[in-house]
Length: 148
Image (cartoon, rainbow, N blue to C red; front, top):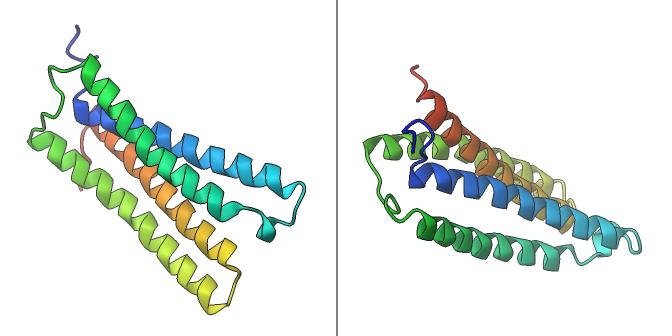
């Protein structure tokens, strides 16, 4: 296989996280929106849907990573210095959105907003963290780490 087309197991993992995070959050939004068509949004089963989509995302990510590892056992679990640096870079990008979401949730709590909005601010922050952190990792694999 062409060396340029090969992906390390860590890059594959970044792609899996990206797809699972987007799919899980989209599923949550569809479920809540469809239920909100018949009951008020704040009275919907949003907490149940949130827990199920978070749990499903975790299990789905694990299963997909195992399947990917089975089909490419040669490099499964191998991590070099470049992989560690790229992972750290992606985590740094992603963590900034966790902080932003935490501050947003704190402000909502201070304003005594309904739990729905506080929980959704935190959930969105985690999703953005996963998505943007994964995008940063994929871009770093494709174009190299930024040199600041």
